[in-house]
Length: 134
Image (cartoon, rainbow, N blue to C red):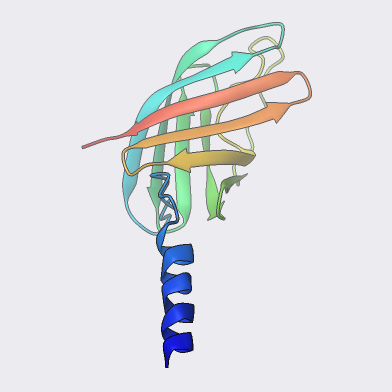
């Protein structure tokens, strides 16, 4: 009986002392709306622009303040990555350049209020900092 108590106490101590880092999983089947900014780094152009993100039933819509900055499609989330599967296709004239709308696989952190999304590209990095709308 003493051995089982000892094992129990060891298990409680080992698993009960896990630090909570405040990160939550993003629930894509809820109705969520975010707004904020994105910033590019390390490329020829360093941009700081506005962005919105709406999530509903596993799908998303996203806009940026740049020309042709609209994306929508299916959303997949795993432990620390988020994949925006853009189902729209708009030819973006070379005159305007990229729109930086959310598309493709990114890393993310969510604390219940603030959503940080980022990814490194071959020419630099992009980071989105969003807050949940009330």
